[in-house]
Length: 466
Ligand code: NDP
Image (cartoon, rainbow, N blue to C red; front, side, top):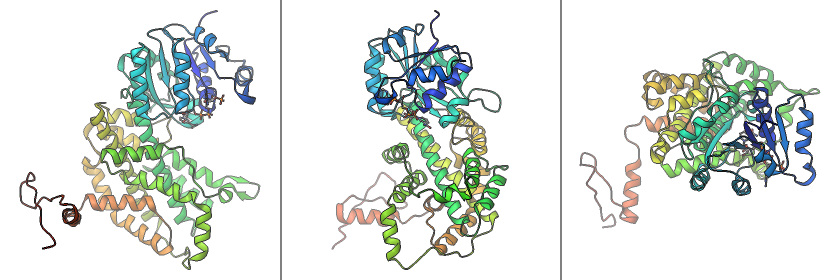
């Protein structure tokens, strides 16, 4: 029997979908899942269910799985991130030969990927940390893939990864080498951070619009926006979500208002804090999810305070639309700036234009704006360097301010819109009150300060109490 071209470990949501995607494209595959608890028949069931696909072989025995793949082997791990990845690597690495390749397609932390990359390099095993985005449907039809590791390793597996990836508007694969060691997993992490803010912005829009509009009316607005420069996958699915009913009831109205998370937004924010990059929007979106999780406390406190959400007038749709455009641009500016700073720090040399192109299809943050950014980054290093974008932001400043003021009057929290607005105001303000912070630091800690119109190399200290 001829050997398989590619192996996949883990038949969970993503592993199954990627296996079907690859098999349908004619790749000869071996798939493996451990035997655990009541899932003993997971591999058998998967193969039986898809017996029409003759090019998939199923295994519950790791040795047999590894032997079934042609050398040098290329194996994708699609398992839970964290210690499970190390456990699988430990289990498989002694079965592999020099020049074989392991790819981690899960949401691993990039620092873990860097360590695993170094460890496997010593064993002469190629290691690729590959960000995968698009959820179950993307994995099935064509995800956006962000492989990191080294160029030579990537070239060996590029034909397979590029075959299963989504295609951009020019029919090029939404996949490309991102950078060395953990770069692929890093950009996937920031992709998720950007996604957190994009989702929170839509939730905040919904909170405001639903004061006076039905789910159907809001959905209609989102559907219209989706025909413009504001179009995005998240906008499109939100318009659909708002219309979905179970019997007579909109499903959205029956969902408990506690947002979950799997940690990638938190990791992105922590990294931004470490690198000194103000990604205020994704961080406020993470905190907004945390605050939502305190449902019981929120209910108790809401009964203790007299002020309630009001139903005062909200701005016109044209104002809200401008505020949304403004906030999305700031969000993308912050996310890409974080990638750029990390790229410098880790010497990844990430090509932002190529990354934006990879994110134009298959992934959750695909959008018309992303399409524009793939062009913008060919000419500029940062979104704020683009004059046309600065003009849009300046021209929308009053709109977002009006939107926020209306939210205050109605007692609606707009964490992420506020972050966007504050960031813009601060970044475009010549003199911030940070000189007072410097004076305070010098007062209690003799941290010194610099002076206006004196060379920055000179530092001063004052005995403030005398
Ligand atoms: P699932 O929970 O559906 O599947 C997890 C897989 O990991 C299963 O095959 C499971 O096997 C296996 N696994 C869990 N624990 C162990 C273990 N101790 N030893 C061996 N195998 C184990 O997860 P997903 O498919 O959704 O996600 C897989 C990875 O992809 C994760 O890192 C996730 O963050 C990432 N990801 C997920 C996306 C999504 O939309 N779902 C999108 C992009 C990335 P078993 O069934 O036997 O428990």
